[in-house]
Length: 101
Image (cartoon, rainbow, N blue to C red; front, side, top):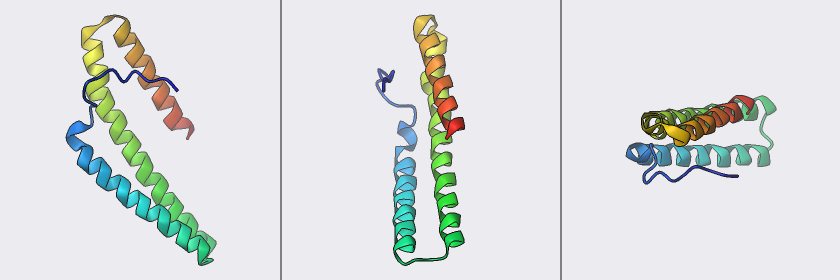
């Protein structure tokens, strides 16, 4: 899986701690779902928690995409040339992956 990660600093760098905190919370939720399955909890309760984790991951993904567009893609677009086209294509492919998931 290729990446155009030649940027010195990722666009989300200023919010890195927020993203890490959210990811730790999501990890805890996933462990909780595993415990629910192990404890044979009601299916609908487990599905409710899976839905909550899915929404939390989608929120992280959308935040990262927004940061990417506002920094990496904008910088490349302002510079122009093949780098701009590549960053736009990369962003478009990322959006397509999110829509399919």
